[in-house]
Length: 69
Image (tube, rainbow, N blue to C red; front, side, top):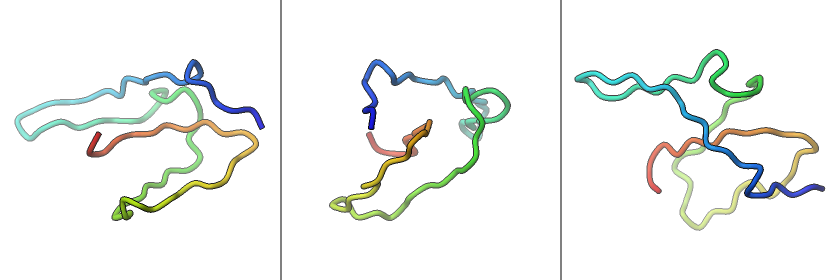
């Protein structure tokens, strides 16, 4: 299995709309450089939990930090 190198990672600018109600981020059209087949998210995960202990033969993914650092 080929490991991802830090040089393979890039930051994608997600368009944002701002008004008096706050910011709205929009992911549509060709914002992501590949076809989106599945969207999922995790929440209320304990800080000591371990997730994702598996691999895929071919996969591209986008990670969005919804909160935190």
